[in-house]
Amino acid sequence: MTPTNTSPERKGRAVRSSLACLPCRSRHLKCDGKRPCCSRCAETARDCDYARSRRGGLNRAALAERRKRPAGVAGDSNSQSSSRIRQGEGSTSRSREADSPGGGGLLYAISTGDDAADFASPAATRVHTDAMGSDTLVDAYYAQFHRFHPFILPQKQLTRLYRDPSTQSRLRPLLAILRLIGCIMSSRRWSASWKDHVEACFAEAPPTDPMMVQCRLLYSMVLFWYGYEADAKREMDMVVRLATDLRVYLREFAVLHGGEDAVLRESWRRTWWMVYIIDAYYAGTLGTNKSDLWDIDITAELPCEEHEFESGEIPKPKSLSEFESREFALDSTSFSSFAYLIGAVRCMALAMSTAPKSAGKQDPTHILQAADSFLDGWRLLLPKNRKEIISKSGEIDELMFQAHSLINIATIAIHRPFSDLKFNPVEDVSSCAREPPADTPVSDSANIHTVRVLRSVEAQVRLLALPTRRFHHTPFVTCMISGGTLALLSACRVLLQGKDLAIARGQIRMTIGCLLAIGEVWPRAARNVREIQIIARRVLGLETGTASKSETSRSSDLPSLSDGEEQGGTAPDVDAPVNDTEIFPSLESIDSLGGWCNLSDLDLDPSWGLNNVAGF
Image (tube, rainbow, N blue to C red; front, side, top):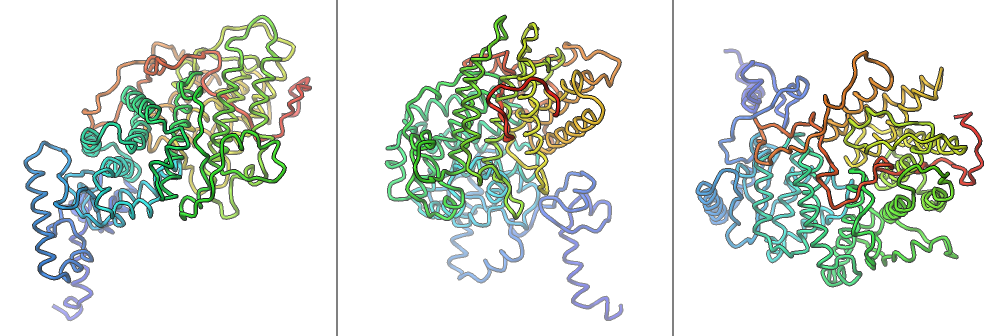
């Protein structure tokens, strides 16, 4: 053997080859050992698994660090780990492991050197009581999901709070749901093990603990967009009931439960407002016009800017009454993006409740003007920095993205029933659409309604076309995008020609691409893409067959949460649409509005002086 073959470099390569994933090793291919999925498996869309570590789940760096500890410390750590393992072996499959002795809480630290099975299963992870900073699933939650709905404490603040032994048991359910979301965002698959762990933690938590409002709200969102609508409804009902029973909507709640911690007080304020927003998102996604939360007298103060929340430098909060009287302010008072999203939701609710629920014989112009005043007022009072939702560095203000999308889809849904953009019966295939209204005679103001719909669609397209490296937003924008796409499909069929038609077809192509990006993570969004494709083929005449309602009929049969597995299990059948109005029966249906409402960030003319649709 030559000296080259016995060199340290050669030995180093031999050691590293043992870290190759099982698929690459079985095929004798070079593997870069990336976790949770190596580059080769990612390129070929293979399941990437690693052999279980013989070092107790520690990578080399962590193992070397443990060897440096005094013998007594190492012995205590080993005895605690052994105790947890014995307790875990005596429990049922996928059950939650016991708390660490004397720690009062549970924290799964998953290092980058762990195997893929550990990544997906709580029972396979190693327990540390002080390693939250190295928890890759919590990291994944904050990196890939938190900015969509930023009401949980910032990661730095949550880590600090967890170091207090008296709070660890209370934080266990929250950490469990954060890890489930982190697992979904990282692996893009459902984990039955993490789901079972979440529900076990929920079952042992005090049912009236305010922390459970946060936990169940997050869990409801995850369940809904993974296709478990009935279970999502159950969780959301519990959220609303607990939040109202505890009176989280009052200013005093944040003061009482936040104490002297300004960041914690801010988190509680955000918790109420996120409950309010998500409840409205459900109402829009499922095509309803009623929420019990819309009639509550709210005194909770408004959230601050995101950078202030993250830094812990919380300013004096502003009140809802200040925001809703901002048009009379003598100074240039600024409000946060979160506050403008809250304002958009409240305007949407007022517009939906004001707009006519059916196209009657009489022209509803005066009624629609009132609905438009809420939406136009929100847009016209936006300061310049809120209209430009993308920064010079290319970062998108996610909360303002949602707010603009919500205002846009509100206008589309309110005006489309009275426009020339008629509903096609095949649109009933869409789980985001409601039953189309009955045909009515075209009124003299049909052109006005058509223009408003098309301008809102154009504003929506401009949002989707913002230059970002990848389309990454909350799944709740799925039905907002779909509503605009359905209106644009109708325009392609009955209105647009030549160059305008070609442009619109390109815009539809882009919107479907955006929905596909969301569907890579959330199966319910993926199902919606297929629904849009079925509708488009029929509306645009791309097929000779008939897309009958029976072929794509909605089904109320929902999958059981116990059916899936994190490795070999299957997610809910995303091809089978669900009867959403039956799942949320407590919310009143507004079939004529198609679910959502919209207003564009374009300069719409609120004077109703348009006479034709030329120039679009």
